[in-house]
Image 1 (cartoon, rainbow, N blue to C red):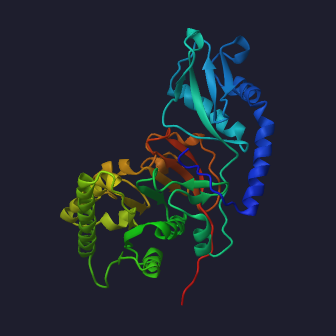
Image 2: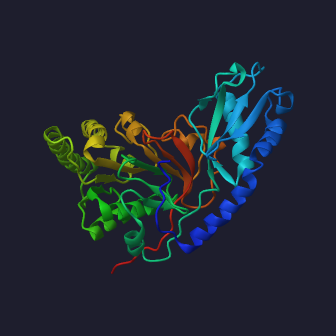
Image 3: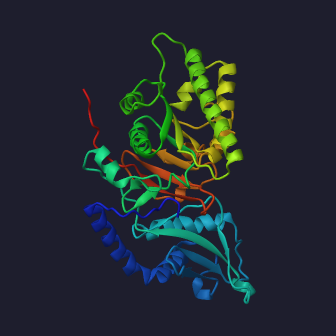
Length: 389
C-alpha cells in the first residue's frame, strides 16, 4: 500500500505496540468471518441474512480485507448504499483490531464464474490494528537523520510512511485554526528539506513557517511592512513564474534525455485561502493559472505543490478548483464531518471512519495511481520544537 512503507528502524515502544496489536489481530483473525456475520445479521436491515444463505463473509487470504458475497437471487440491490451500510457496521465492530479503509464508491471484486449466483463480491480493504501517533522523544533533526528518506518519510507509528519518491506528487493539508496544521507542516518541511529542495515557502502570516524557512536557509516570501495584498500576491506570482521556467527547462532535458532524473522540488504555500481572499481579480486569475500549470506539468518534472489552507474551496484556488484534483496526498485535521470534508474529500462518506480524538487528528487519503485509493484515520506526529535565540 502506498502509505505503508516498511523501514529498517523502529522505536522500541512502537515495536512493542506493534507486537501487541499483532497478537490481538491474530486472535481475532480465526473468527473474524463469524464475528462479522453475527453483527451483520443483527444490524444490516436488508430483510435477509446469512442464516437463509443470502450472503456470506470471506476474509482475503493475505488478510488485507474481507468480502461480502451475496448469493443471488436476493431482494436487496447491490449498490453503493448497501456497500456503505456494511462499511458503517464493520468499521465500528472491528475497532480496535482492524481499521477499515474507506472508499469513495462501492468496491466490487469478480469471483469465479462457475457459479453465477456468487460470481461477484463487495470488497472492504483493512489494515491490522488502528493508526497510532508517532511520538518523537529525541531532537527532531536527529530523528530525521536516522529514520527519514525520500522513499519512507515517517508519518505515524508502526512503519506508516510516505513514499515521496514515487507515490506522492502534491500535498494538501486542511483544518481550522488550532487543529495542528502548522505543526504538521513544519514536521513535513523539516523532513523534505533533508532529502529534496524547497523552492520557496510562502507564509502570508509571517509566522512559524517563515521562521522555519529562514532557519533552513530556503527562499521565503512574506508580506513586507506596509505592503498591500495585491503587491504580495504579485511577488508570489513572480516566484511561481520562476518555478514554471524550471519545469520547462526540465521538460527540455527530458526531450533530449528521457532517462534524466531530477531532485524533487517543493513549493510550499501556507494559508492559501488568506492569500487569495480579497486580492484583485487579475492577480487571483494569474495565481490560479500558474498553480494549475505547475500542478499538471510538475508531476513529470519533479516539481510538487505543498498547500496548507483552512478550506480548499474555489476561493482558495482563485476560482479554479481543478487544481484540487491534482492533490494526491490529502490530510484533513480537526473535526471531520460532511461539511469539513466536502472540499478535499468530496465523494467520501466520512461517517464510516473512526476518527481519533485530540489535537492533530483527522483523516488522510492517498491516490498514487498504483494502488486503490484509501482513506483512513490520521494522527500527526508529536515532536520537540528546537528554540533558537
